[in-house]
Length: 251
Image 1 (tube, rainbow, N blue to C red):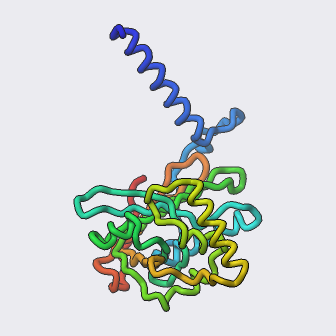
Image 2: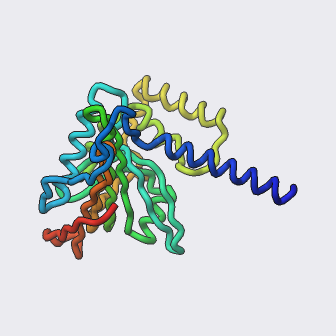
Image 3: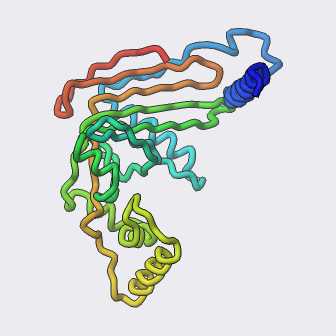
């Protein structure tokens, strides 16, 4: 391919990507006359001493906005790193929010579990974008800290409250391993039949475990409408230290 034609194609692709990016940004109404109405600086207020209080406030607000919808409000991105530094990310459900940390449940044979055995540090990210008062309210919370595996007695109620398909999945899925669909379907149907006949109680298999992240870093990002976002960064020196340091940082 001629270099000039290649450059034109690359330029066209770049312009398409820019247009797609811009289409996702909030837009000013054409009737706006005052420039102060189409820019500004968002302010997070009040600022609690404990970032868990701010998280709970934002999480409750987001959940209430979607209480009548089918949106799963407690989805987050979970990032782990292997012993050689390779980062892996995936979406998980926040199974429980404690006063001092965040609980997830997973397969102990999974890559994330292996990562956490080799490197017990993880990062969770929540992103919530909602239409509030006719304007987009964007909130992101980044969380990082040490992760420990919980004793079964601490969280067995989480597994027990799982819907049927999740309990069946715990038995028929070896997470991340190759599978033949027809065999997979047969295993599912056979186990469902055993459960229906009372021959299987679907109690927690040993490989289903729970982990808890104790945060030492929390970053809160907020923007509402046509404003530059505000950010708060909380840090503490260890997961047992109750004193957080908070600073406002640029978006």
